[in-house]
Amino acid sequence: MQSKGERFMRIRQPGKIRDALWFLGREESCVYLLEGTNQSMIVSGGISYIIPDLLQQFEIFGINETRIKKLLILHAHFDHVGIVPFLKRRYPGLEVYASFRASELLLQRKVIDTINQFSRDTAKHMGMEKVYDTYDLDWHGNIHVKPISEGHRIDLGNLQIQIYETPGHSSCSISAYVPRLKALFPSDGGGIPYKGMIIASGNSNYTKFQQSLEKLKDLEVEYVCADHYGYVKGNEAKGFIRNTIVAAKDRRASVEEVYRRTKNIAATVNELASVCENENPDYLISPEINKGVYRQMVRHIASTMAKS
Image 1 (tube, helix red, strand yellow):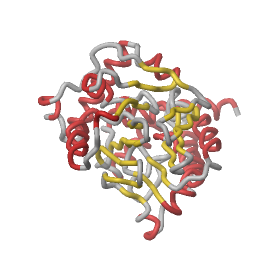
Image 2 (cartoon, one colour):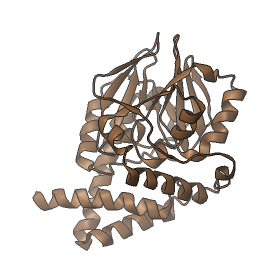
Image 3 (spheres, one colour):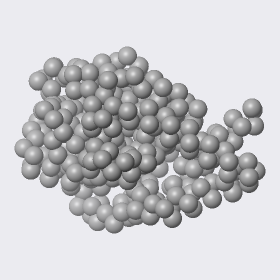
Image 4 (cartoon, one colour):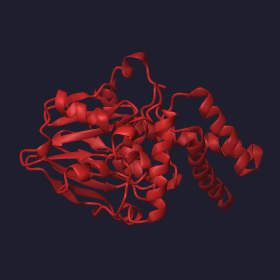
């Protein structure tokens, strides 16, 4: 948990963060705009239903859409790629980047169908389903995604974006870092600043998730631009990844405790998901999807316990 003073380091209202950096979208689904001297880039693909907010923010904030030439996907989960098809149709020349694994996944029909279904389910869960009556938000066909990997740099002129491979939340997770702004974009691989806590979301491989946090911990950071529930700045941002490392250890220990007691994956998933849903009824992810997240996490942790 964070102290009262530290909570004010978390900004959940979209707007300008600093020169060349904007927080756009909604509190529960954040995307960011980097404005370089040559062109602008959107970082993260958000969830589909934020499109009306995004278009309104372009107008209210005076953002020049014609400068947006690039979009960086940080991983291919449905709530992080939702705005991509709409923006690609709006700007046909938009260059879309993602990890090699994400670029493979986003060519698979089954993955695309899941993205579309989960996006609609979540819009309904959040009372936003009517957005689909106005906007075409579904993925329809193949979108060319340029694969990038560890060490790749994206050049916006005066801004250089460094890429780190940070799997564990998903097999395709990457993080982005802008040294000039001291801004880190770790997506869910860096922890989710929900309410007064940090959610350690090592969905697909908890061990790799923890290893990826170690990779990021020594970066000089003044802004942690999270994909959910806003960005973190100041002193909390400087220690955010290290605090996520602690939160990740604690969460893993709690999963192990329940699994030792139940000796059953399904029972462990049901217990943990039920507690989460009762304590956080307004969380973005629906109970059905959340249970699937826990299932992935518990299976991995149970398998590592069996080997030890």
